[in-house]
Image (cartoon, rainbow, N blue to C red; front, side, top):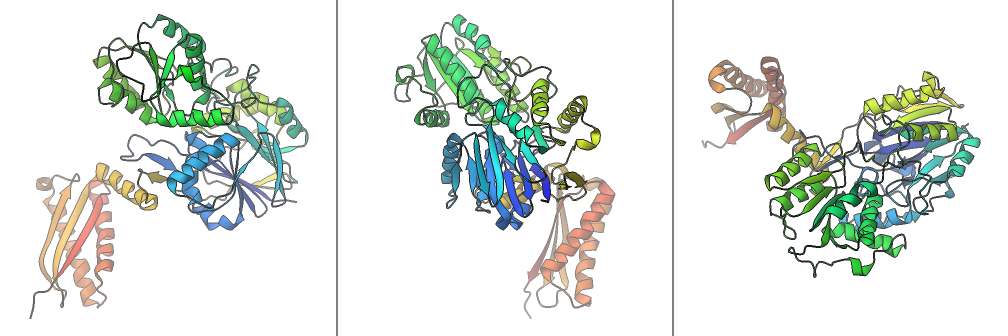
Length: 554
């Protein structure tokens, strides 16, 4: 019987950075490759992506990477992975176009992208894989079922249950889900972000009834902000403008490019007479709707620039009606607060949609129960969300009659191994470390640099300099000890003296034992000094020993 291993390289106990791995015997299948936005203390970090070490070490076994839709939290890390691993990608047509744009921007070539239907069946390296359509804020979204003789391993992706969703590219087919359940599901991986909400998410994911009255009351220009990739919400805004005969200017070229993809695929068409193109737009126009979009923190930074008259296209004026159509998400709170302050300082007023009023298109408790009811899995693994969300999702499973030994709350890197339709072990654990990106091309080195920034900001730095005779290696000047952000020198003369003596001792001992090597001695001194400072100060500063070898002549 097949051996099955399931684990996450990201997406557990966090929002974003989703990456799940299913192994059927020797075949590896990767589902999602996303990013997350950094915590506020991660200075200079643009975004965070998963640790790909395991996948790189086993790249010859990777048979396919499945990307369920085009949101950053499931696809934006893909170019970084494909630079290291040239595995085939399976995704929907719209997402394939987005991935093509991303790979071109990052200079990644020779990648095979398979455009698959939302409802599809394929055999990859003797393993049958089935996709099934699910409703989400992005067209072409689907879930994945990987078949084994122990049963299917089902990943729902991000979804809601909405019986009024009639557009084919958003439609969910519950019959397909039920059919997979009838054939036997070993394990169900279902997202957890909206689990604390009761009932169904629909119809509270729609903004039309809330935004339309604000449009009707507005006398002049309307500035409305929305996350670029919330395409369902963007289309809602366009439809409101269409009904109210408002013309639209898209502030963000990338959103307009995304809409062009929709038009090319005949998913949605924006009437040309509604749009004000960039060459026609003037900042003094009154009866116009300016759609301002971006991703993550950048959306709120753009709004701040407009409020502070620092944007080259649009400047805020008091007569503007401002609508924040995208509620704040985790990791962007500080930028959102700064943006609101900037607008209020200019005398503006904001109509904000609360995340409690307008629900994100993630499953609430009744949606999640529907998945358990239709798939009838033997084991249940909550994924996607902070730890409290995973626990609440597990408790929901218990309320549906699942015993605790059938529900797995895993950590990133923790491997669940199944044999003969039974969970055999969760003891194996991969050591993972997030990869931090600050926008530079050399992202591998960047992670080290950003870690150093964090150390400098919290524990400071100590530089210990010594000059030695190039030939004899005898100390001829120093040691000179300098610190920044660690201790107040006048109160810690004894620490400075002790550190200097430790540096001298390392050099003298190595010379006496005839093992002197500049790099080796600096590493040895760094280790000893770091341990001493941790004991004395409780801090672990960046320690930089410097040994200058000086040619003093004969």
